[in-house]
Image (tube, rainbow, N blue to C red):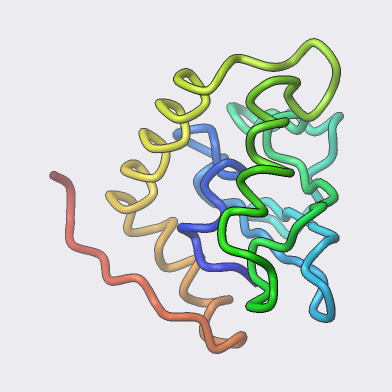
Length: 138
């Protein structure tokens, strides 16, 4: 499981998407799976409220977001920038500024949601991931 800071592009959707949890393959960090609050795999066809699958689904990483041996910035260069340019599925790109605005807005919503944080912490604790402290709404 990845820390929420490394999963924000898979947590878009202020009501449902903020509950998504992202996992990567342990040995190389290249294969991703994203699960919604009910434990369902998020795929390109997922439609659950504002949790739109083609935006939040797991993808293949050409450079691991979590592997320590990769050069710093490789994940940005080979995975995030192409996402900005093309989206996860042809014709779904929204551009860098829009994607960043949405992701960081949803990150703020996650941090303001006691329910989403409790959901995250309940799983993160099992994976030795730092827990998130709920500080209330801004």
